[in-house]
Image 1 (cartoon, rainbow, N blue to C red):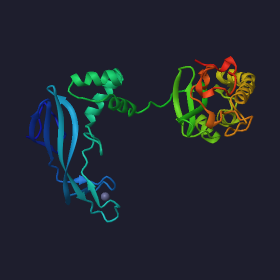
Image 2: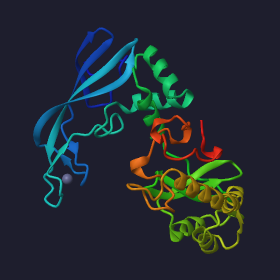
Image 3: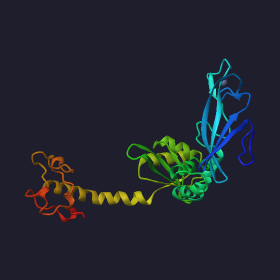
Image 4: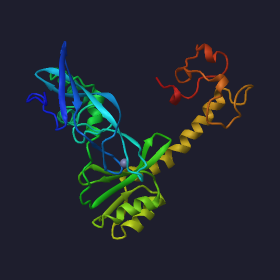
Length: 305
Ligand SMILES: [Zn+2]
């Protein structure tokens, strides 16, 4: 059977057998093409190296979950200058190399994920004969290509953490559309400036109070006005006012809880001595055994509940 109107396959693939187990339709498919093109030099190759089986999920058929068992081949590339000597047969468009599902099933999951969400889409897919997890749906949605950013006149720029505390980049936001338009791989002035140079329509850059992004805006968008965004305007004075207060209070609490005692850290350190640290330190009561007889309770400001 070359193909079936209920399960259309691309030219060069033929259905060998079909078996059903519960709600699973298992379809064995064989490739009948006489040659395959090398993925590097694109020359057709005919010499077969070996055969292998590849299992991929496909779109449901008649309420059945469909599994394709593809009997594929490996070919020798006989082009002398080609670095690839052996390659696996490709089925372009129908299934991508290394993919565990066909392209049409991937597109169906993307549509499902975009229309619903991870959890809801997974519940719905079970009724459609697909059985995809929420994570799979989200991965399919995230694999969708991002639309290129349109013209942006008011640009927001700030630090971005790819991995908290480890790897930082730069986030660029269209402040009129309230949309993230780009994530740059680092926080360098040159990288941000290079991006801005491709967007001559920028009229205003909202940034933090650091010098890096100020320099990037001067280099990349000299025509734009620069302003400090509201968060950085309010957070810096807030820190200037309250940080000395909290630092002083921490020092005082450290003194009360045993700074300078044997095993403790010297006075003036902002952290509690490890040997005297108590997980209930901030909720300690006078009868707390961890602090019995050592010191009076710290200021009420530290008695968090
Ligand atoms: Zn080749």
